[in-house]
Amino acid sequence: MTGRSIVLTGPSGVGKGTLLKALLARRPELYLSVSATTRSPREGEIDGVHYYFYSRDRFEAEIAAGALLEWAEFAGNYYGTPIAPVQAQLDLGRSVILEIELAGARQVAQIFPTALRIFILPPDLQTLEMRIRDRGTDSPEAILRRLEQAKVEIAARDEFDHQIVNDDFQTALEELDSLVTSA
Ligand SMILES: Nc1ncnc2c1ncn2[C@@H]1O[C@H](COP(=O)(O)OP(=O)(O)OP(=O)(O)O)[C@@H](O)[C@H]1O
Ligand SMILES: Nc1nc2c(ncn2[C@@H]2O[C@H](COP(=O)(O)O)[C@@H](O)[C@H]2O)c(=O)[nH]1
Image 1 (tube, rainbow, N blue to C red):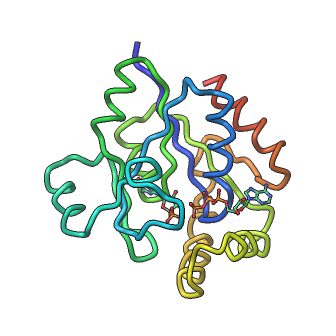
Image 2: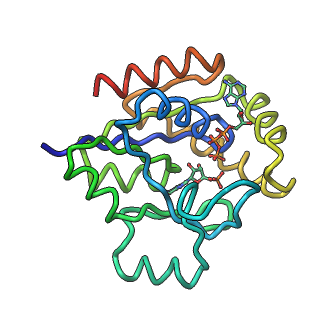
Image 3: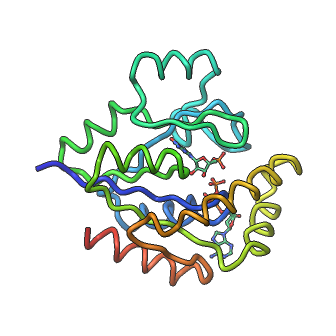
């Protein structure tokens, strides 16, 4: 039996990564896809664990080789999902979670029409901005680009099967857990 693909999308800084870390701690049977990106590693990020950090040339070679399930440019960098590990885990019957932005989520909807697609919303844009700033990982220019893109992504929320507002963290985590485990 093949596993289920689950797509988690939402604006940068909304808390997707934090929610998934807590979810995976409870549900180790789930597989979280490790993306490739051309952005520089943040403090504490490890190549092959948090992302595969590629040069632009390497990323473009992976696109040309058909090695990415989906890919997109986001805030000046490439991001994409290496296809081989995802397919291997699905073939083993394991559910796979992709934490990806909107353009990638749209591509996955074409490739895996039965994917469970979940959109994470902030309580409001001011809270989102505060979370990105307080995270302390992005330059002022990068924050502005991410906030502009956030508006575009939030406008597409109705394309998704489910929406979760990440206001109170525990409430959002319970909602996510219940959607993923009933999938
Ligand atoms: N419910 C919440 N209430 C308050 N702060 C939160 C909540 N959820 C997450 N955060 C904080 O918001 C910040 C952004 O979270 P996180 O890095 O998980 O976002 P993200 O959606 O994965 O961002 P990106 O897409 O840029 O990787 C972190 O500092 C995190 O601790
Ligand atoms: N289309 C894809 N989007 C991805 C992938 N991996 C991560 N992302 C999204 O990029 C932005 C920015 O991430 P950050 O780590 O630089 O803050 C965020 O929305 C991620 O969900 C991917 O493989 N494909």
